[in-house]
Amino acid sequence: MSVNYDVIVVGGGHAGTEASVMAARMGAEVLLLTSNLDTIGQLSCNPAIGGIAKGTVVREIDALGGIMGRATDRATIQFRMLNRSKGPAVWAPRAQCDRTLYRRAVRSLLEGFPGIELSQGMVARLLLDGTHAAGVVAADGRTFHARAVILTAGTFLRGRIHLGTDTQIPAGRAGDQPAIDIAQHSEELGLTVSRFKTGTPPRVDGRSVDWSKVERQDGDDVDYRFSSYERIDRPRQVPCWITWAGEEVKQIIRAHLQESALYGGAISGRGPRYCPSVEDKVVKFPEAKRHQVFLEPEGLDTHELYVNGLSTSLPVSVQLEFLHAVPGLERATMTRPGYAIEYDYYPPTQLTPWLETKPIEHLFFAGQINGTTGYEEAAGQGVVAGINAVRRIRGAEPVVLGRDDAYIGVLVDDLVTRGVDEPYRLFTSRSEFRLLLRQDNALRRLAPLAERLELLTAAERHVAARRLEEEEELLRVARATTITPGAAAPVLASAGSTLAEPERIASVARRPGVSLRALLEAAGIAVSADDAAVMSAGIELKYDGYLVREREAAARLAELASFVLPGDLPYLDFKSLATEARQKLDRIRPSSLAQAARIPGVSPSDLHNLIVETARWRRQVA
Image 1 (cartoon, one colour):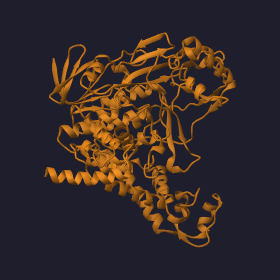
Image 2: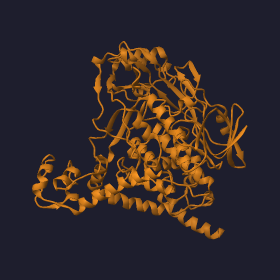
Image 3: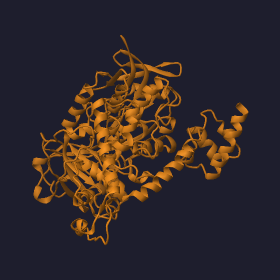
């Protein structure tokens, strides 16, 4: 049996679902082939979406037509805007989700695209036509042909679960078989493979928690939505709870440290620095008196709680012992143990800036197999791979998001230029353009690109145009309207400020704690725009001077990016460059001078000499 498609997506996680949606929005016939249709869109670890930088990625995915934000809105059972103590430019939306509702939402949204076909099956190997990917063969013998393949296998490639040093279970995650054949086949194709590890904490039955010993944490009382294109009713909102792992927990873990798969030698792969196991916390932060633990609901129809902060690879008996040493969990019933999982990933310097593998054309990698950690990072890569798989098979120029365009652009550029030596996680600090890349202006930044790529429906284009027109009108009115001291006084009083003489609203709105909406209304101007549009316009005004400087820096980066480096440059022959620079440039093969500048070990003098060498080489081959 043989079937033909434009694009085959292997894997139904966050990268795979977004890749499928993007390709389908571009008019491609897509097959999403996954080992278990019931776990499409599964929140395998923490039942939450968003957070620092990650929440902005979700909004970027949504602006381009992706489904993560829409699924999150359908599943949010608690919402919090993180970083509120800092300026609004770095606020970060985060949603606690009902795990079942989220998975159902993803499946429902996928099935709303007629160009996407879903099928269950384990992929055994790739089909090649020379140096091009041409389809896949399933373990059950079915053959699927396509003009491009996107591999998004997550932690499934030779995945192995560890519970202590003695218990090892081949699995992609608990309850799912690992992908062995495709992992071996990919390695046989000459791709470099390495190993990483990640982990998950135990879960407990909420009915066994002593609520008098834990601190209640309610969500924000705001009606926030991740999606800009639709507004659906959110589910019932519920609290989370906070407790602590103190000295008793630390003593138990220290006493059993060599029984941990991580410290007992059973795991060779490196784990994520920014989501460490509790064993790592005890070893690496011995001065800390205690570590925060969050009890997070798994959903509205279950009492099960995710014990965030206690990720572990210790034996089950030890997990139960240290759980009972946590205040509030003295009598807790453990419903599922935590575990570590070790899996294959492909060092991402083997990829182009549009996530196509360099050795095999029309084969794309996206998600955790590129060395990242996190649902949002995976989904962002899926967007890039899905768009570019279709662009490549149509002979169009690939789409590369710049570092000043989106956090997705920062993510992909970091991966393909710098590579990874530990599971990669996004932070605002990874971006040089944090004021430009805000969660509130994702639609303004990326909707025009989505429209040019024809990713949006007519209704979605109308929503985006209306929102952007509202923001522009707010900015125009604020810059053109003068407010008197008397009219401004009630607004400024709450911010501890005064106005000596009439001043433009745009100027007054730059003051800390001053609301643009309140100023406009105080000046007698009716504001019909929604809160999101007003907030975004207000931030643009508050950071106006800083934004000008960031845009100038972005323009300089664009100049470097415009200096194209041919793919067949003989870097190793450029003797004016340092040996390290030649070797790294030859391995990564940057597409522009801007990308070359971000490669560790390439100095400013190397860049100058590279310009000269490139010009000389072009004259010789002309």
